[in-house]
Image 1: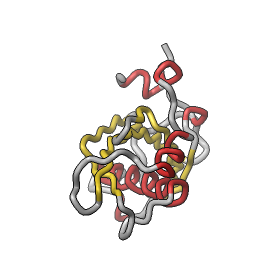
Image 2: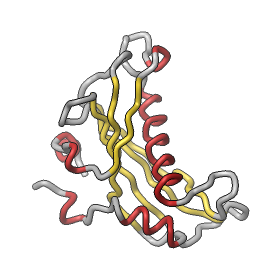
Image 3: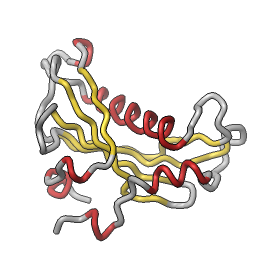
Length: 154
């Protein structure tokens, strides 16, 4: 998808939300949230969802998700002490992989300040070989999956 589509996203496009209170250390020398922090935000909402809704227990689960690609598009700066609301959706769901999209919203705003995400490939936690997603994981992710025809606002 291209930037114009991401920029038109709104809260209604995301099925799960997590609040994040920015920290002083999130800001960089330009007084806005450093680009690298956005990837921490993506990781936080995805893993919170996987733990709470899909039964993932990172130290003991037989499967784990490894990030194989990531992206972020920035539309306006955010900075401490803003409170952010992170929205999560699943844009693609395969047998062993899932692509997440995260909308980063300033508290109370309907349009995102940034949209990004990444693709996980699920692997056996010991061998690190690709593995078909387990039932509870897949069931939880299906709740956030937006079919391709509904994902585009053309």
